[in-house]
Image 1 (cartoon, rainbow, N blue to C red):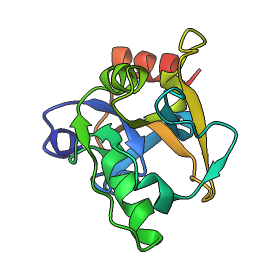
Image 2 (tube, rainbow, N blue to C red):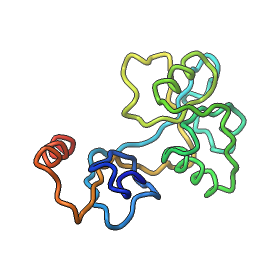
Image 3 (cartoon, rainbow, N blue to C red):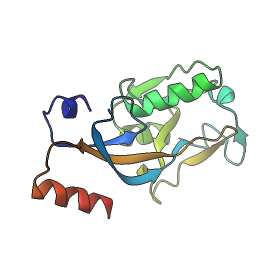
Image 4 (cartoon, rainbow, N blue to C red):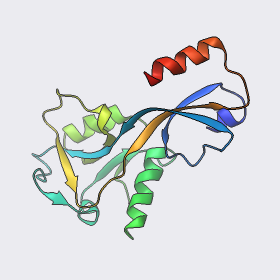
Length: 159
């Protein structure tokens, strides 16, 4: 978002809400999604239960790095419930978080669209607290004309 604001790029694809997006940017929704907690039931037998965020604090949490919108979102969610989130591992890849959850290193927090049917070794962990949905969005300057290629790119993303 900072690169878009500085006119270093024409378009970004990012999660929303995103505190770095500013009012002069035009936002096109691409996909609505939910973030989920996942874990290997052999190491974290929480499947079929409803777990509070406070109880999740007793387990190692695997999440994206602190400068990501996902990390900001999860930290804010914990703060709203007067909880302090201290992740065990922070990485820059959802795929790596899923891989670490598979081998039992912790409970990963990832977008649901990152999961597929082949990940049967993982279970979704239901939380007592409702996790709000988020959106994947394309953002660009509303006052700078887009090229034909950029317009086509955004059309393909939003179909």
